[in-house]
Amino acid sequence: MVQHGPRTGSRVALTFDADMTDAMLGNLRAGRVRSYANVRIVDLLEREQVPATFFLTGKWVERYPDVTRRIAANPRFEVANHTYGHAAYTSGCYDLPSAPVGGLAADVARTFGVIEPYGGRQTRYFRFPGLCHDDAALAALAPLGVTVVDGDVVSGDPFATAWQPIVRAVLDHVRPGSVVIMHVTEANAAMTDEALPHILAGLRARGLVPAPLSEVLAPD
Image 1 (tube, rainbow, N blue to C red):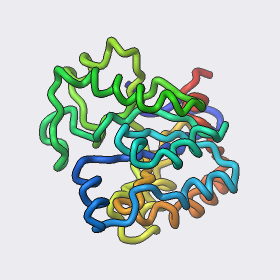
Image 2 (image 1 turned 60 degrees about the vertical axis):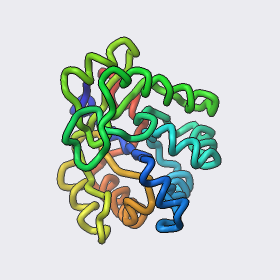
Image 3 (image 1 turned 180 degrees about the vertical axis):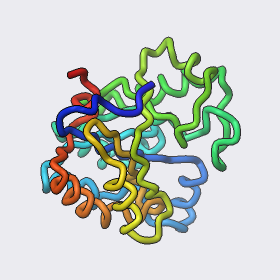
């Protein structure tokens, strides 16, 4: 399990989680929300030629195949695994429904199977929903050979009502080797696309350069 890369050099990883639960799918079907895919983030990253790593849930991929295809087609983007339906891998993880320990490996393997046909820069990186994990969950995933990635800079973008706190949360804590956690789930993280230009400007001012997660975590 890793939190960040080497604290040398200038590289940092911008990572974006793409959550999708059955409740979120229900919100979409009922018209309570418009979208859980913030394409404006992808637009900006592409326009500015900024590398990023996307942790995708299988259900998000199935709901947004065109956006997934676009992410996978970008050589600056990496794709990683964020479970199939964003269920908690431990008990008491926010308000997420819990997945049984006996099914965790199959859940992650299923997600890799959903993502694989899209090609692109696929990785064996995995992030737990809510960053919630224990020894049993880690042991369950060991046979899959995944690298569990948390992150050392939590943006707090889910349900934020303004962009400024997101920017402060990132720029106050980012350092060389940092792994920044953000979300591309528009309705649940509506301010991320507004915060991102300010985050990128702040990184430049600090001499920090976004890079794919694999490069940030690589040994010196």
